[in-house]
Image: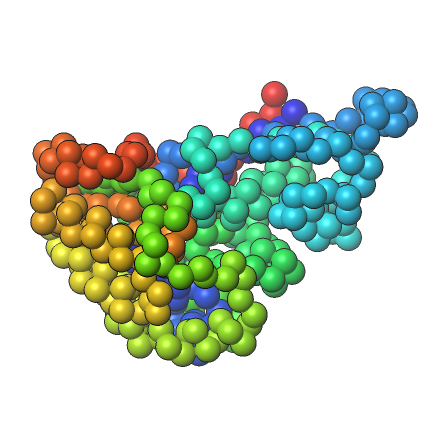
Length: 346
């Protein structure tokens, strides 16, 4: 049996610039992201010990929030797992078995978490399937392949930061360079800084349907709709992107006061760039800053509705005051995880 552990991520600043609708027209993309202790786990067991896989009943068994027993990959109901496996059928490095069992489980409820859980699942599956030589078990290759599968093949409106964070891990700045391919590059700080940053963060789960003032947003957008949406958001997003390098230098030298100030400034542009804003988020943010003493904050997820997590950056001795001010919300423990996706064989 193979087990992959793939971390979720928290994006501090620059999220949205990693969408092709932005970086191909207005780029470059710049994002700072850190991986968290909360992770996605995938187990994978080829059922090749039987001469007749049909003796097991259905040759493919999946277990997630539901259980599936099916006869082929195309019959899998979980659209993301089905899409990933179908995209790998013709890969010369792989020979997918006719019969296998796969399970997925996460440390926290991943649906609507806003922490890159779907991308962590894709990376975790690829990490397992590419963990045997001569498969290209390289974090950069897996990151780009996962992004390509989810964005181009499956047509989901996702950026590349989720897949790179999940595959590579740590506290990093990601950016594109215009080399004709919009290649993704990244840099890192010492793991000590990641741990220090995590000690300054406090996070809360935001409930689903948290405001009657929020309009229902579409789950998927066409490419034309994404481009039109980006035309409306590009200027405000660019203001945020222009703050990334400054925040990165502050993180490198441990100036968390200035990191908080940049987050607070970025909050303004993030709100401004959203045509549909959940008013309850602004209320909760203002409580955390004015009553809790937070230096700044960030929503991980959409500011337009649905679930997600609200992160605050504050000196550790202010965390209890923030907890009391936001006692209506459920807290999530924030831990820094310095690694990308890993595989264990048992």
